[in-house]
Image (cartoon, rainbow, N blue to C red; front, side, top):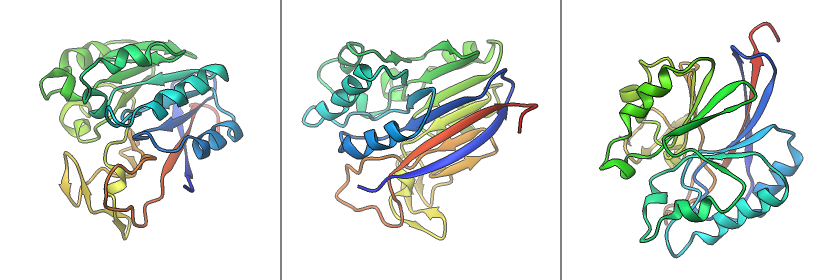
Length: 234
């Protein structure tokens, strides 16, 4: 598959430049072209925005990718999407065997910012952990949140002092015409949040895998290259 690399550069209240690669919705797709991008794009860390795996019949490739990245010494942060919930066993235990920081309604410090992960609502009877979001919003400094579902942004995140949210889940709307996606789970027909940057605080990636029988149209798989710059640097 041919992967598009989309670059965003944002100013942030940080002291040094940080480069991230953001990957979402792999669904057990072919790792080779993903690794080609990772190896050819200098970065400080890799962010996974959920649905690394698909289901019990197709999850080994996602874990294989984590293993390869661990061997390469990559710094990886991973949050949980809805498909990580579709197992008779706890996929989190398998993920944590690798050198990756699992952000399951939790956060960590990296290069002077807070990197956080809000798990998909399936882990909490359909709703995200609102209490965790409130605790996160009270922390100091720049806060970057991995939140698989972009439809959570207007309802739960927008009014909180969380600086930047990275999402996937919408798969770009599957079919894209005139810059608009046609359908996204959780948003329905002609969804608002499918691809791009919104209000300078939400970035939605089109994802990499395609678990549907319906093909992508005008909607190439995507990795996002995100640069955060100190506010006084251009």
